[in-house]
Image (tube, rainbow, N blue to C red; front, side, top):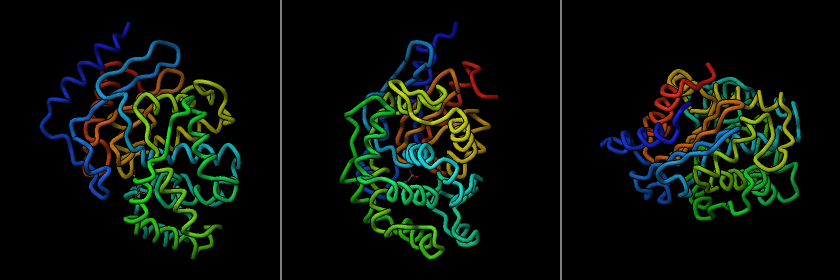
Length: 304
Ligand code: GLU
């Protein structure tokens, strides 16, 4: 029998002692001002008890992790049509890279780099009557938690500093791969990035990807085949240009964000979320990566 609480406690104590905790994202004050000492983990087991440690109940900015949820919403509704406008290959480049998009004629490499997420945002803006409200409701429903909110200040600051996102959206538009106005699509995109959740809520939201499309409460409308594909894209594209390293060290599909969150999962077994705002050079949570590596090593639980 694995003693999950003992393992999480030991990982927490060991990593919290580290002097080097990475660098907190500095491009907007709401992220720059988060104390580096924050560190939490929440393990949601599909067929068992859940475990947590540290700041697991403190909300943080989910940022790029939202790209999995917006993609899931578009994929559930539009099915394979989504792949007419984007690909599913890892980019090997930073999340906001632009030259690849130019070279590949405005078809983003995958839905988890910014240009791909902007194309998905465009699809949802076309599809939904009240895009921001309906997307937030989707996130609340899959999580089973009606308290989840956008952080309006973060969304506004993202818009003020989002020059590369404007560049990507305009490039997409020039290639005819953006149906709606740049401003409207980016307003949606900046809001999705601004969603705040804690480790428990993120583990609950991603439960459906570990549980064959069934949420904590209710159904996601994703088929088992779609869930398989989303997990595959998380494994190959979920960690900026460090997806290979994450697969190598941790061995789980997952997604990270510049707010310092990482959510990862083992199908039929668990979802796990770590949050520590200090990032490594590639933009992934420094302690989060180490914590997950220790967790899969000590429990021998990974997809490989
Ligand atoms: N809002 C950020 C951006 O689009 C997302 C950063 C991230 O978590 O990768 O620049």
